[in-house]
Image (cartoon, rainbow, N blue to C red; front, side, top):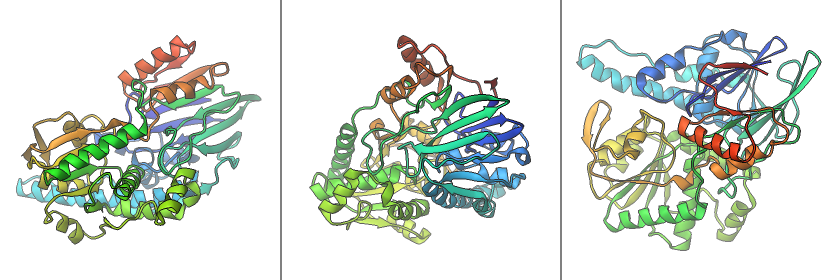
Length: 465
């Protein structure tokens, strides 16, 4: 059996790991690499394997850095099952279509400028139609339901607690009479997250563990600390009549923020100001969340019962659908709150909100998630004074506030617990989905606790197990 680390190796985006077992090829995720535009097209267009040769895909969750290159996989010849939980299949369908739409729209905008400069037009990575073709291959499975994606591999998906429908993957493999238990974490959630159930840690007799390490160098503060920081940023911005602009992932982070704002307004801890969720994808994703209340945790059900209205709906909240509704927000004076995708401020309507509000010192740009290198979100998080949006330079006069404690990824403490659960069993632990600083810190922490068999594979490295 061989593992090829083709994405999210020594970086956080573009998760993609190819397993060769019994002559079959099983792909764990097919995410979109996000970063510098030149690298974006090069790395996402070119697979290091023949897509037609892949026998099945297992998708841990619907975030684009885990699912977003499936349209290219299908476009280039893949035509086999893509296994995921029911909620993930539902979310991935709408997210991939939205990704295709956004890429078409952004290229159209960019090509207008290229035309004026006498440059040839650029092509989108894939289209909305390409994305829609993925749907026919999605195969929903229930949590803890065993299935056999390729001969000799029995798989179970377990609750990961990261976003709705997210899963860790248990693979019980038999190859040439030898049995191996491989566990792939996907993205690990956190304890006591809003809306979601608790993550399940690896089970017994795990021989090899592949796990994310996004925050391997950073313990998270309690959610309530982040909640209070969010409240304080909103209060001071409202007091000066400003707008709170929040780039947020449409699936997961947006729903968490809406839930928190619902709670804050219900309790009277922030003023009752208009809140806009301006992302067609976030609107559709929220509808999916509302269709899966069985995935909610006890605290969410208690909140709904106590306040007599849904967790993701309240009087001050507006979900915008059309472009005209989105544009109309910019004509409104503050104070108000705008939540818009994308989470790394690379595509979508958030770019227009940033362009219209970044030079007003009354406003705040609120960064609430990890930002990949070479993205606009990272440049804002690093408080650069000049940034480029749609090819134009803007002077940032708006405040930038960062709140790390809202992350839906496990912090260092839970990552240590996750790895330690296989301490007396695992022959090797492979760290993926993390930058070098995070991985190095986690390796050191695990080594101090007696886990010496932890490695950090290179991009395109392969190992025999």
